[in-house]
Amino acid sequence: MKMLLANAEAWPGFDTTVAQLKDGGAGLDAMVAGIAKVEREAKVRSVGYGGWPNMLGEMEFDAGVMDGTTRDVGAVGAVPATLPVSALALEVMRNLPHVMLTGAGARRFATERGFAIDETLHPDSKRVWWERLQKEMSPEQLAAFPDIALAPLSNAITDPERVRDTTVFLGRDASDGIGVVTSTSGWAWKYPGRLGDSPIVGAGFYADSRYGAAACTHTGEMTMRCGTSRSIVLALRLGHSLGDAVKLAVEELGELTTGFLAGVVIHAMDAKGNHKVVSFRCEEEIRYWYWDERMAAPELRIADKA
Ligand code: ASP
Image (cartoon, rainbow, N blue to C red):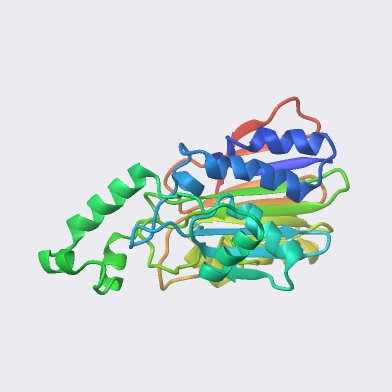
């Protein structure tokens, strides 16, 4: 059964992916086509052009793709000046012997593959970034910026609860191939070079067409420590139901007591046609998009609370 599951940010591209899946398109290509629209939509204030810069006011994008039939993966992290980065992750998967590129090397590869150098800092993101940073800096820091220690500021300002999110698409195509694609600008005011979980296979995403797929949003610093997406797919392989597999991953997140702890949202599907979206420690109501081939149109649904 053809299926598509994505988080609420997916609205600009969800229908594009559904249309391509309906037409028999390959899952990863269909999902990258949809996410590319999300990345270029300025109204989506967490991904691509509408996202948020790092502490230096520079956009750094993370993305990942996984083909659950071959377990091939492509990922890019801290990439400047490039849209759509999910398409760049797919290029890494298809054209290099590597799984992940970061920073300047990823941008170099983007140029080799024909990606333009994009202006990616939204004027409103620039304004908010600088206003917030200014408030936190002493006159001495302000005068010397950016040649100052950023870590104390990063601890004070980085605000994953206010401005951050990722778009995640998990899909099953006409050949029963299950795949997953992620894209984000990461946390606002993150320390330069910080990677979240979105480009980290096993943490932010994982797919195996025989069992299912999972992808996470919100606090990557937690899902990276637990290998959350891989845990879920491994639990499916070991015979657990989708509900139990997600419950196990939530338990592991709940066992963390140190480090940065906040909310996580898990999106998961199994190869039997079930899906589950669960929010853990998120105060706000979490919504997600779902479509399968039995449905006339995609639906925006409310996630369960863990
Ligand atoms: N998980 C992403 C990260 O840690 C951000 C998010 O989805 O909110 O960069």
